[in-house]
Each structure stands twice: as C-alpha cells, then as structure tokens.
Length: 629
Image 1 (cartoon, rainbow, N blue to C red):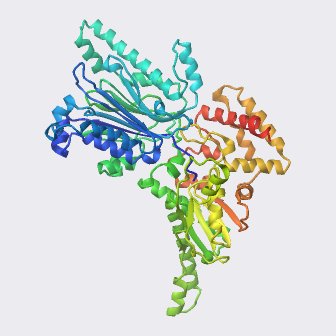
Image 2 (cartoon, rainbow, N blue to C red):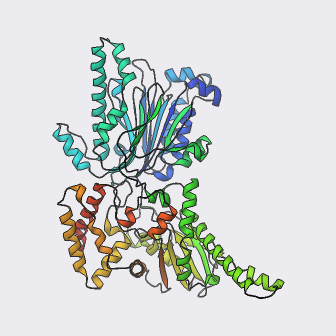
Image 3 (cartoon, rainbow, N blue to C red):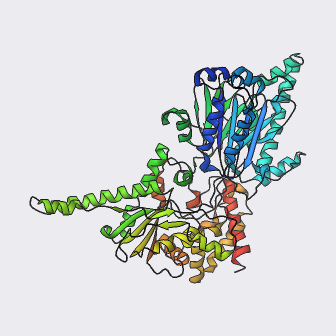
C-alpha cells in the first residue's frame, strides 16, 4: 500500500494507583510509569511519525510548584527527542537522590502519577509544533487545567464552530482539535464552578472549597456536554491538573481503544498487543473500550467505565485490521491470514490453474501475513490434488510415483525487497519518477522467464501510484509469463473522513478507472446525473442524505474496472499480461466479522457527516476536475 496514506494518530495513557515509592521498591525505579509510557509510544510508532508528545501530572503538589508537564516534538524521531528532554532533566541529579522516590515526587519534573502520550499523523496537511498533541489549557485552579489528545477526525467542525460563536465564544483557530479543546475546557470550567457553588452553599471556605471541588469534579458531566454534538470517529484522552483522567470512544466504535486495570495501574492504548507486550499480559486480560463509553479514573484512583453517549452503531474500522494496526495482535493476525486464504479460488482462475508454473510472493511488509494465508490456501488445494492423483492410480503406488506426486508444492519466493525511502526534498518530476521506480528491488533468477506466472499480494491498492511507478516495472524485469497483483482488501472506492488520510475521490485508481470507462463508452450522462443527485442530497437535512456517489459504479462489474485500472497503471514499455484480483466484500466480512466499518469499499458511512462529505467530494470533483478536463 502507498505509504503516503496516513492514519490519524495513536494514544497511550497510564495512571499509577500506588505511590511512587511502591514502584521504586517493587520494580527498582519510580520511573516505572514513565518507562512504560515510552514503550507504549514506541510500539505504536506505526500510527504516527510526524510528531509526538506527552503530558505528566503530579498529585498533591504544594502551591508554587509545577504539577503539569508537557513535551512535544516534530518529526519521525520525536519520541526519542521528547524522552531525551526527560533524560536531560535528570543528568545532574545525584544517583542517591534520583533513586529516592519521595524526593523525585517533591522536586523532580516528570515524576508524576498520570501520563498521557500521543503520536501524530496529520490528515489535514497542517504542520508545526502547534498542531502536535497533547494540547494544554492552563488555569490557576488545578481542576481547570486540561490536557487532551486524540485519534480523531470530526466531520462537522463547521457546525460546532457556529454553535460556539453563537454562544459568544471566539475560537483562536479553526480546527477540530482547537475547537474541541476550547469546548471541553469551557465545560470543565462550568463543572468546577458548579462544585464551587455547592461548596459555598455548604459554607466551606478557602482550601476546603478547593478540596471539595477536586474531590467532586465529574468528568462524565464534561464529556456528556462536550461530545454529544460531534460527528466523527474518535478516541479522546485527557487529564486535569487536579488528577482526573479519561478516555472516550466514539458511539459508532469507529476508532479503536483497549485498556487494562489491576491494583497497580490503569493503562489504555490504541492497540491491544502494545499493552500485552509492554506489561507482559495475555490477550484475555485486556478489554476493548466499547462505543460511546469512557474509561474514567478519579483523582483518588477509583476507576470506572461510564456510558457517555448511547451506542449509535457497530462500525469498527475494518481498514484498521487490514493495514494500520499491528499484525502481532492474535485476532488481527488470524484475520489477515484468512483474507489471503480466501483469495485462493480467484488466483487459481487467474493463473489458469497452472500453479506448477506460478511463483508466489508479497509486497513488503504489511502484506506478509495475508501472503501466508494465500500460501495456506494453495497448499490445501495442492494437497487435494495429490489425494485425487493417488486415489486414481488404482494400484499401490511405487516409490517413484509417490515421490512425483508428493513433490508438487507451492512455489514461494522472496521477490520484492523494500530498498530505499524516496526523499521528499527531490521535487523535479523526472528525477522523482526515476527514483520512485527503484523504491523496490527484486530477486533476480527467482522464476523461469516467459514460463512462470508471478503472483504478488499487497494489503490494498489505493491510488495505484506505487504499482505504476515502481512495482509493475521492476517485476517485469523478471519476464514472467503473466503478473497477477492481488489485493487482500476490496476495491477502495470512497473517501474516509474519520481519521485516515483519504479525503478525495479522484485519488483512488478505482474511481479514476470508472470515470474513464464512462467517458469511453459515452456514458457521461451517468456522471451528470450523479452530480445533480449529489447536489440534491446536499439540500436535505444531513440525517436524511443518502450517498448518491454509489451510482457511479453501477454500470460496471468489478472485473471491468480491474481491466481499466491495469490499462491506466501499466508502465510504458511493459507488455507482460497483468491481472488484478481484489478481495470481495463478502470475503472481507467473513475474515473480519466483528469490524463492520466498510465505508471505504461500500460507501455506507456510519455517520451523517461521512455521507454528506462524500456527496460534497463528488460535486467538487465534477466542478474542479472533470469539467476542466
């Protein structure tokens, strides 16, 4: 899959439930939480390489002492940079003091009980340290200090922005992150003030009021009044200066979150195996945060799961399972293998059942598990052929006959090697294209030229850029009889608006091929009719809209679109027969039954905002791209 496709972010949270001295005695360091946060972030580095940051909160600090620490950095080395700052802060501390948990808690920075980390991939194109999470809203009252981060993309920022301005607020920046921070901060202020009024009614005074507020803040109230109007996919994490922490998942279950709790720690992350490895746990120890609920940890350490918004759908993102999440998760590994195995009949047909002259491989690295599944499917098929041959002999086979039959096998090779990373500072077109063609290298002599088919599997095909610029051209150097490119995912036809960087229809090779077919067959009236239908839908209330863009694909079979994609992506000078094989929608749901979010492939968006934006995307395409051409 093209590496230019990014997912939004990864999150990690840790709440220590014991004093720092406990971890010093049991684990040999009070930095237990800090070290575990580093591991959680490093093991989720796949989710964000444009920036990273973390926040730490100390409990029970004295006035005049800092209690909320934040570090952020940009770039793929951001994790090392921010934890390097931590290390630098301790370099001049005497060893005996550094190992003194009580001293650390009183004096040293980052020696706290609450930790929250974030890894960033931008889906907006905005860059700069100001866009790196966690965000921080300061106040002289500890309970009003708020730091939050998230893996999210909201589809209705304009509506929320208008609502805030109608209330008299004036957000400094127009983005879902800043608007969410200000809206949540505003609701936190109101919650603190509610408790202030209650404390005054009880005739409490001075520090008694502060203690009452900090003991009685209900972050569930803040979340219920903040998140009720948002449309999108999200996991939002946050903590206050007084020690409240929370993590909330969207009510459609689009973005993932997992947590673990024992008597020492509460931890949450975007992916399950990250928690497993970091804390040496079994998969069954870790729970999934359910849609619409929040993991809440109070200042005193009490932990609960609370429903914030009633569940609105069952649309956990299937693309997380196919591509973005780590394949080391026990369920994801099994799902990806099954995605590959299910493609066996289609691939057999594409090589005309001549598996004896077919070599199998994969595009490094995320397609590797699906590749193992495809091999399993072919092994099962070949074993059945062996059984039939033995049964048809009609006599006890000789050693030579058995050897001839049993030596039939799946021919698998390491064909493709990820060789270089194209550097973005090279912008001149011809130079960039030439370099792009060398991103992958091949194993020469791995198949018999003009005799063997080459079957190569990828996890997904989105824009087709890597196929055109690199893979097809370099694979052709092996001179296969036929190239079969297999996608473990179905055809990606529709944009995403919930956190993955795929917002424009014209980026997808499947969409571009469909438009070309309509033009070739003089069916551009379908484009015009779909354009008018999309505009009509956009006049309706958002909740009543349907996705009119789905009409664009109705005139063609997937096979017709595949043939056109090959024609469009075939590099100049490559004459080898090429065939594309995609996963079916039924195959997707069979392999990944518990993650029903398939809008990338079907256009069935789980929220009204997704449907609205898809209709808008087609209108924009026609007005800004199609009509100009």
